[in-house]
Image (cartoon, rainbow, N blue to C red; front, side, top):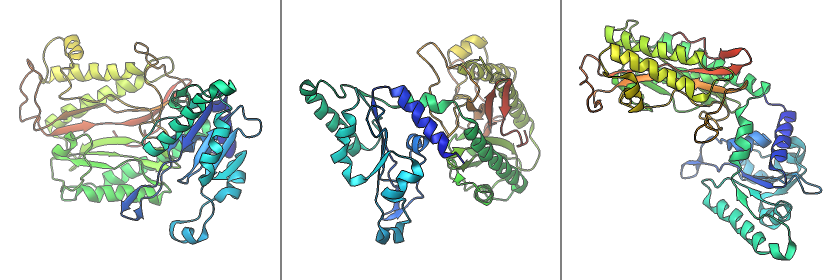
Length: 431
């Protein structure tokens, strides 16, 4: 797990970055499934990154210029009658000791105490999220302090998005975070191995899903990192297919996109293979093309290269391969610039990975400059080709023969950038 000292270091880095500002983070709300039945709670990732606190109805304030309290928590107090139904809470007294806050208040004192901390900063850092009521609360306090600024000559005069300060810090993973990702991907690998052993004609997609998610929990994971995709036949041409209710048949490809969450860190793996163990000729051609694109893209995930390079390489390989198969025609540069390949390949080649499956962090530093890879970056590499039964080629491109239709292939690995190149964390799943 992440040690408490690391959370303290994260807070120190963040407070140094906001300088004379004050930052506010709100916990994720409790989501309800059936009227009064609650989903398993999942904390807001930014809130969790800075506090490690895993309860709803909480607010964290960071006020580096306050004379006594720089890290302030507001939490729900203990209520044993309520906790019989919903589970134990840390409470005000224990939260100070466990989470090393300078002071902890009951959440119902937030309105009373908030201005005391906001007035110590020259700006407020807060991300205007989905909680419109809380957004209005922060804007109200900010406007109130702005209106009284002429009488004081101090206080916040600007409201800025905390994402632009915090998310660059989340982007580079620490050794402890890499350890968590190793565990999440290790469990994910074993679940994919189990799924491959189990898949055969006549089984339903949901049977494979059940085995995958059973393995996640049996090996100590928190559960799925995202809804598992188990897509056979032409279902593999639906990028986010989650119905998982079709019976697999001989001759089908099976695309499995599934990852385990472990201690809030996530794996994300996709493999595609023939249900009966044998590729048809068109399936084999498409699979080999996607595999070639993925391997060449992975080679470019290394120190000093920029984020766009591995995607551009995957697109280049796919375009050349589709031309050889007579599924595209014309000048490769024109095909790429005109995005004429998009009926076959419509998504990017990857994303950052960490506390969120699509993790925090910018892909570009400005409109022209892509992020340069550094040690500690973790990302997915996941090219694919999808030839839907309903595919419509771009004008001027060949019509697609039924010989190819219904084939969907994606291959995805999780890759850590290192000082010497990269490490494929998910190498244990057969390709």
